[in-house]
Length: 161
Image 1 (cartoon, rainbow, N blue to C red):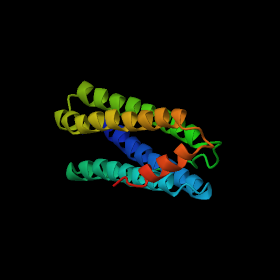
Image 2 (cartoon, one colour; image 1 turned 120 degrees about the vertical axis):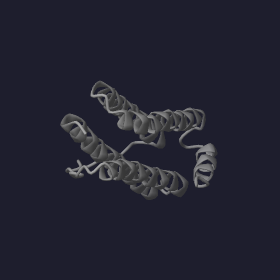
Image 3 (cartoon, rainbow, N blue to C red; image 1 turned 60 degrees about the vertical axis):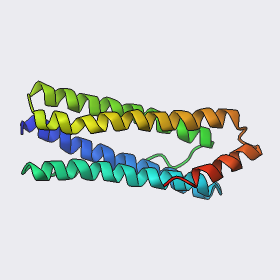
Image 4 (cartoon, rainbow, N blue to C red; image 1 turned 30 degrees about the vertical axis):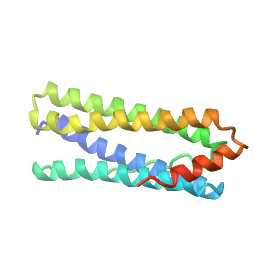
């Protein structure tokens, strides 16, 4: 594998783990706000991001490439509302989409077909990630933050498997 592509894959492992860390911090915020359904949703998101990092980790291992783990920055710990959290979620997912697209373009540029095919799954996954955040944002805009609809949404988010 091209050295620049190896570095980019290692960087993306860090990015996926950072995403997981962000969502775990968001879960902690929701727990402190007595919104266990929102916290559950974020904990599930955390697990999903760890699984993404592990897909990349295993892909490198399968190709005989050493994984080089990197430091992860501290995530934001405080928010003003559930809406702000999900607006930040969408913003972050759009950043991840951009990073995955750049990684895919690099794989194509260096003619690494195995990496290109592998990364197509991540491209499709990012469409789903952005859609989920957008749907919750739209629901939160309808549900007043102080109203009973927030509690109903909390219960709905608790059902995520």
